[in-house]
Image 1 (cartoon, rainbow, N blue to C red):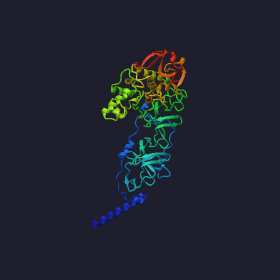
Image 2: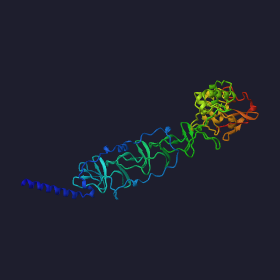
Image 3: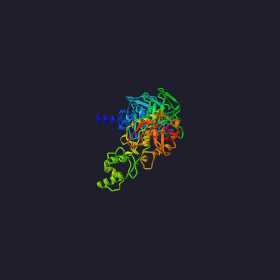
Image 4: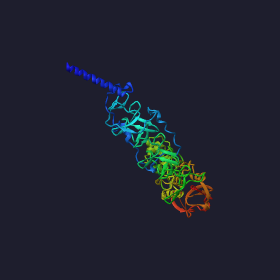
Length: 513
């Protein structure tokens, strides 16, 4: 009997204790009905794989400016938008940053709504920051632990899925953010991290590319790091102050050389006067353009086919003539192809020449835009000089082993200098009725000066019965580099050799005025 009474009293005491505890806790909602689940939430180190990636994969070190490939300067895009749509605090009066340490003074609890912290006396933190186990947490006025973005007063914070306050680099929604490691406050504006400067927009998102700030234009690499020194962008060169990152527009003296920039900050090294051909670092691509070898066609592909058919010799014009057509028909008949006498791609492939169908698309590589005028002149002359000894090929424009004619050599030399006199190109150069030397002389974006004012890098033109038929590159001291007929390879000669003064046009072309 006594034993039964004792057990009943103990049961009653436990019931009263539970009732008193529930009264003290004052649970905010019925959702806490299953608050007896006392499993502890993940620590900051035990977040999901995605969360770990976001917290640990901070931007890398700054890349080399020379390898940066980015859009040209434009006005920055509109602001990233208000994050309030995806993050909010339940408190109208945000709590302070003061975080009391409650380590060992309570227990983590979870119900169907979320996590909360039950103190030993049954109360719970609300509308406040709390430090537990070395990490800092925020609890809404409902008592539930916050996660994700949180606005506290004027500042934004980010709380990991574990609830722990995050510091350092954070990747969220495709953007990088930087949270002060000490306070957790999301940073905006120019921010220095480990000796590198980054720009974080008004939303906190790290910006890349060109940004116009109060002191001028800055450029931020794909990893967000502010660039300094020379920057290549969209085919142009820019100079960014190594200390401030501000794009240069005023003249610059650097390593004994003077550099000038236009209003956009771009440095061209050399800029032709208005109305004349401007340098480029990319010669216009020819796409699928190539030449089918029909009657009268000239050039590199004709020479290659002549060699394959056993027709070519040092004094043979690279031109489709009667012997060429006959030899092609004979080959087509043997190869089981339609007998047309025309070398199309199918016939070319069957010939197995060892050269692609587009071999006539060869174009010399131009200088970068940083090159000065003198560097361009020397590049033009240097290319032509490097071809001396190459054989003459009627309608040919190289490469070296396939030979050049006079205008083919000049056209490729212009390419090497960074000049692209469209619509003149190496494909048209091989056409039967196309005379590239005449086209170059008449090109409207080249400067003409009197012959008596000739200088190194000018183009000298020669006539036959008053019509331009030959062109050479002037070296100075009345010397030229050119090629002019079968059996006479590219070479250096006196300006009058084989022609005389009377055959020169009264003016010369200055492609780099």
